[in-house]
Each structure stands twice: as C-alpha cells, then as structure tokens.
Length: 482
Ligand code: FRU
Image 1: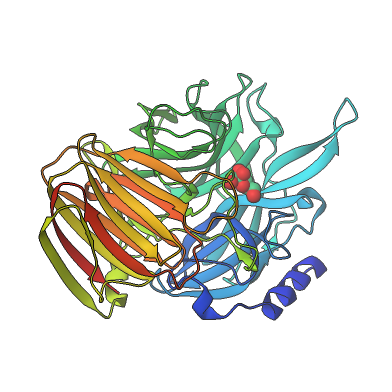
Image 2 (image 1 turned 120 degrees about the horizontal axis):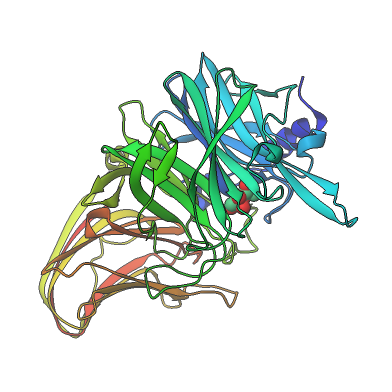
C-alpha cells in the first residue's frame, strides 16, 4: 500500500517527460521538477541506486520527496518511481537528505524527517529527526517506530532544529550513522550513532567539531576509510571566502585524518575545498562492486539558481568520481566507465599558438571529454566552449599566477548571478586539463584530479564550437573524445 501523496508524485512524474535530446547524456537529472542533494547512493542487488532531494511539482525547492534512479554502470541511469513522499506526521515538512545501505538482503534508507512544531514562544519551528524506510529497490516502507533518532539523544545544548543528513555505513557487524548537528557555539558538529537492528539506536559520540572555524552548520556528512586514512567530507553553510582557497556561502570541504575507533573520535587537520567550481554541493560516496570509493555531488549551489524558464526540470548531479589520497590530498578522477561511451577520438596539436584563435572542425559539440596539455610562455591560454556568434564560456589559464578561471559571463545567463570563479593550481612546466561537458555541465580536472571545478552553463545547445587562443607562445595537444 502506498500513500496518496506518493501515488500522486508517481503519476505526475510519469505524465511529464522531456525529450531525451534536451537532457544531459550521462548525468543524473529528474524527469520533471526540482532536485538537490544526492541521497542514498548505494549498491543494492548488484545495481547502483541513487536517490535525490526532489520536488516534482515545480522547478524550485518545495516539500521534499526522494526521487530515484538506478544503473548498472554509473553512466546509463534508469528512472525509477519516486521513492519517498512526506506523508507522515513526523516528516510532513519534508523527507530531507540521507543515505542507504544493503543489509540482510534489504535496502535500508536513512533520512531526516522534518516536521513543524510550535515552540515555547508560540512560533513555528522545524524539528529534524532521523527516520528509516526499508525496501526492495522500488518500494520503501517507513518504520512504525519512526523517528528512530531524536535530538534529545544528543549532548545537551545541541540544536533540535539543525540535526540532519544521516550517512549510514556498516562496520564490525553494526550499522553506524554520522549526522550533521549544531553545537551550542552555533557551529557544526558530527554526531555518531549505532544500531544492531536498524530500529534501536544508541548515541556514540561527537566525532568531530567545527569550533566556528569553517562556516556554521555542517550539512551532508560523509565519513569513510580511504587509502589507510579516514576522510570526513561535509558541506558547511555560511562560510566566508579566504582568498581562492574557499569561496563564500555554501562550501564543501574535506579533512583527511585519523579515526580512533575505540574512543570514536576523528582527529581532523586543516580543511580543503573539494571542488572550486561555481556549482557543487552536498556530495555523497559509495563503494563500487570492485571496491572503488566513488563520489557524486549536486551540480548546483543554493545561491546560484540558473535554471532557464524553458525547462521543466531543474538540477543535475556531477559525474561519478573515483577518490584516492595522494600526499594527503583527495584526488578525484572521472569513473573509468566513462571511457567506454565515446565513439570518436581526435588529436589536434599546435606548437606555436601565438596571438591567434584557432579551432578544428572535428572538435566541436556539447557532449565531450577533452584533455588539453599546454606548455610554453604566455600570460593567458584560453579555451572557449559552448561558443557561437552570440555566446561563449571561457576557461582561462593564467600562467604567471598559476590560476585557472571559468567564466560564463557570456553564456546566456538571464540573471545577475556569479559568473566566474578561479582556482590556484600547482606550478609546472606543462599543465593538463581534462574537461568534460555534457550539454549544460562543465567539469574540469586539473593537477591530476587534485583540483576540480564544476559549473553549469545553460547556453542553448546550438552554441557548440570550441576554440583555443593564447597571447604568448603556447604549445598544445588536444585529445578530444565525443
Ligand atoms: C543541503 C540541504 C540538507 C537538507 C536538504 C533539504 O543542500 O540543506 O541539509 O537535508 O538540503 O533539501
């Protein structure tokens, strides 16, 4: 038996479908409506499942449902019926972000149930609590015992309003959950809970605290072992920009550190930005069937709403990225499965690109995987994509300062929002930039995946030329796959 609210969402999304050629080819989107955060990224019965924050009825955020897609290879995604609707008293204001796990043959979803209550001053405020739904890969039943974790289980002084985004994982026969919470100092903390049966949960410890160092509330935690270290990824709200290292507003940071399993304490070092692009938030990871740690993020950010009016769908996810640690840094590499989809491979070389702008008729399009190697002496080396007589999106490498910039000023934006962002890259004689475009998304991997930039570009699809220019003497080799 499914609720009326869920039934309504499932019928609605079936009615509304957009022609495939208008949608990204291998990036997750919804059929219709608004999406944010990836949720429940997991393997169940040998298939990859991804859920997401979802409001089917409009292209802006509304009462949160969980949308659902699945895949065999992380590239081709099949749309599944809406998985959760806010249909219980304890989640009537939304089924917020969470995660999933295969456990004893069942698919376990953990999410934040949001309701509204009148506080002591008579004002309405959120109650955020953790809830469980169990399913078979299509239909999910919420536990009678929900919410299974309430903010009363947190240490005194912790917020009852900001307590969300459970990430569950299995360790030593138990299920653990890290959840974002807010300490009485006003900034984030990560709470750890455990259970042996999914219904009865125990508070373990606060494994890590923000201490007002990196933004305020810490949303969407992920915590995992990688290359003999532990990594905590979180999405802080209300950050202040620090040079090019962190941007303002909602950021995503990671810590590589040591986890004391006995004491349940994570010793964190300095935070590093996960993605330097204009549009990246709330990433989540899972382990692939062959043991790779793979991350997908929301290819958008709260302050940058760019969805064109012509679209009935809003928001997409990044390409899945394999993670590893090298010299204490998190390295991101587009999943290897992507290599199998390309039909054409073109190589284009030019040794003395000087004060000119060049292209190649075979190097064009809005869906491609392009690796550009560049060396020489110049101030700027520029790659323009999604270009026609009216539009262009610029990727500029400033050699002297080792800065890479993405600039979408002339990319058909009809709102006065952020148009460019820059990141510092490591000095080197030759630089390699891997640029992946899938109609409206641009993901750039520099420094072998140590520096990544994800941004959206909603230029109309007929802007599909690509050109290269430099103001000095540049040597370049372009490997173009489409
Ligand atoms: C992050 C977030 C989460 C919350 C969800 C609501 O983008 O704010 O903390 O669960 O979005 O849609």
